[in-house]
Amino acid sequence: MMKYLQKLGKSLMLPVACLPICGILMGIGYALCPATMIAGREMSGFLNLLGFFLVKAGGALIDNMALLFVIGVGVGMADDHDGTAGLAALASWLMMTNLLSVGVVSTLMPSIVDDANKTLAFSAIANPFIGILSGIIGASCYNKFKSTKLPDWLSFFSGKRCVAIISGVVAIVVSAILLFVWPIVYGALLAVGNGIVSMGAVGAGIYAFLNRLLIPTGLHHALNNVFWFDTVGLGDLSHFWAGETSADVSWSLGMYMSGFFPCMMFGIPGAALAMIHTAKSNKKKVAIGLVASAAVCAFVCGVTEPFEFGFMFLAPVLYLIYALLYGIFTTITVLLGFRAGFSFSAGATDLLFSASLPAAANTWLIIPLGLAAFAVFYVVFRFAIVKFDLKTPGREDDDVEAEKKAVLSNSDFAEVASIILEGLGGKGNVKSLDNCITRLRLEINDYTLVDEKKIKSAGVAGVMRPSKTAVQVIVGTKVQFVADEMKKML
Image 1 (cartoon, rainbow, N blue to C red):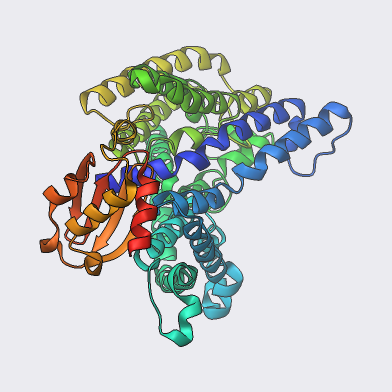
Image 2 (spheres, helix red, strand yellow):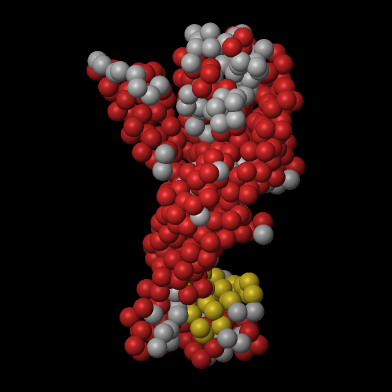
């Protein structure tokens, strides 16, 4: 399971790498045009319009992050990273988000219209969780059915052409399940939110913890609707930006937003520095490129997904610790009386513009709170990464790098392919053949026919047997030439 999560985490690296620059663009845009934060505000002048332009440019990807995950996970989780898997994942996404949209669901189940919570649940269906799920469906269907042979009269749809079709069918089944499960889970989280409202600063900490913990599923929106918006009579965000104070509401206004500022502005940079310091020496530049830009993004405008999705699946235990730190700091922040609000997220831009609102209080505390968050996040992350040998960015296994250095001892690729095929039990025992950067990946019928010594006699670097139906032959960077020869033989 852990290896599967790590593979999922690696597949998210490419789409996540697209996000930091977008967050920075949005931060600059909001700084130039604060009016963009509030719907309906008029904008005029070159700087305002430039700011608006940059916000929309950055938002183009941030707002469609789930779609990036669809393609990234689909292609990344596929055995040979074939684009067909990305297309299949996209088909799954379109199917699921359409079938589970409010319009379709309310037609299938008219009673949903009378339940505001259920309507709210399906209005938030286009989220990163559904994106990742669609990617997994597309990749799994590709890996399973890419070599499917159909009867002659359906032969056009054989092989890779059938993958997107099967993915769509699977998406329909999953949608039917989510039709009943999604509103139950969403409603349960709304109930949890209502239950912790009366718990004061501790409740705010529990909310912050659950908010971060649920980011991968998209279900954090359920809690956000309880605490930030006036769904159940609370609405910390909407009342804060309406210019009200705590005297106008029944709680300390801003308490459900304030704790995010020290964590996002300072805690994430501290955690990022810990990741850089613990990265392998040959991967530090890669780690810096990913997490440093994500840290800047979080500080400037509070866009945290580039950082969070960069490690949550590689090191899920560390992500749990990360969420706990949010809960602790939010409780402390509320008790100390620091109050600030955000209309977008808890970055420096929103802090600057919310500081002048009536409900803002003790905003100077962001300095000691921020320094404390930086130090605590750094120490905790560094200790956990080293103690448990967590695979954060820059600490991934070096298998691929080592295999790239493998040297094939026989330069006659046809002979190598012939020996490997003989060692596999002949072409009748081979169901499918693919290759990645350094390995031949084969599916076989009968594992007892495989002769590893025979395969190794071809001069390859090694043989792996992940399961009874799978064999992987480590060839090195010349694997494509061997694969081409073997495909001719098959």
